Image (cartoon, rainbow, N blue to C red; front, side, top):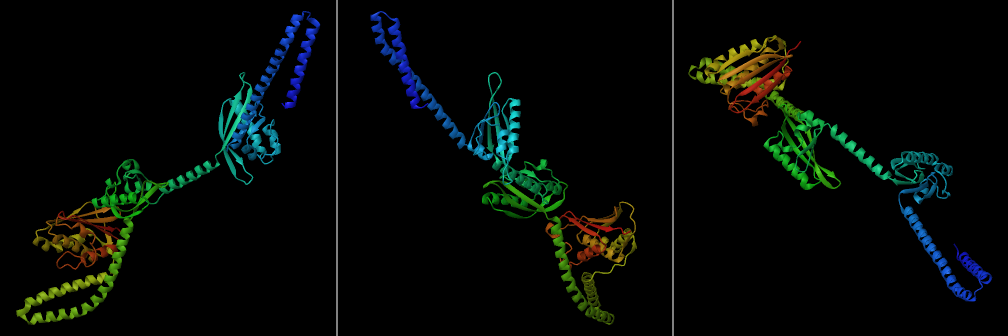
Length: 543
């Protein structure tokens, strides 16, 4: 209300009051004393009346000013909010919206007040469907009669979307009729994108963990197992529930391996971001098998904080065995080349020497004992040369049907005199019926002789030979109760020129292994110092 209007009202009200009051005094009142008294009172009444009018005006003005300030404050507040804020009446008409909401639906230059969403849809072609949907969504909120919350995707002109967490608050009159609706929408696009990125990262991590071709363990900072992947279960036989909560070092490792694991975990914790590649660690599976695990310890970082340790335990048992066989093959190849050249060079003069010694021994009786020793040593040299030739060039197999039991019996009879001289008993036991197999009889007999001689030289009092058919192979097990073999020597068995005997050449086992391999068989050694030795030979049954 302008000052001019207030001034006019003030003058008119004052003049009207004076005219009415004076007219009353002059026309109806006859008593002069009362007339004079009322004239005096007239001024006071007039002042009081005008004061009341001014008071009411000023009060109303202050109230209007306060309301205007509150409205400005509310407008400033909602326009400064990053959320979309919209006030509607009970009919869904827009009463007020902040700048974010107007910009969102491209309504900055539209007189939106008093219009419904469907009416405003005509002003924004791109958001026409979105505004119509908002009206339908409002109707659902009114029907539910309570606060609703949902996530809405609002398209953008550039082809992307914005996701809003929308809250709608319906307001009702006391009689239950609709009064108004408050709509608040918070842009959560960045949060949704971050959550989707985190979810994708978690899915990649879970996929990498679950489908990793190597056994993977998750450890806390103390080295306690929190979880293992399915590959760990497949390789070791231990399920997640069996090892969860146990210290990694408390699993089936040797004392040396435990110390290596402990130091590796400490290194990762101390270095925070350091990676520790461990050595091959021998592990005993749930089934009692020995495997080699190459363990790598990696820090598990959450942000910049160390949360745990990831351990990759690659099963390298077959790899190391293949490497060992390759090294052995390379060594045998080199030895073979050397043996071939030496054997051919030695055999010719050896034949001449043996012939002359035999000739001298027949004519020189006083030195006959020396000639006998010389012939014996020449025969030993000739045997070594023959073994070298076997290494130098694989012998062609002339296979024929033979009975393993008969071959072993012939070998036992051949060594019977030597066994009796050392008071050693040799027994043969058949577990089941043994069929004929295709083999080179003389070569297998050489293998059996080498194995039994080793048992005799190990001071065994009893050598037990067990022969049985298992599936499509014949298994020959030779057990003795001799002195056994030390653990550190077991890994060298079969290597050329490796022997613990005083006069051994180290070629007997090498040749034997080569013969068994030529028959597509396998040889396994099991021994413990002071507890005897067990040799298991597997030969396939050719059909």
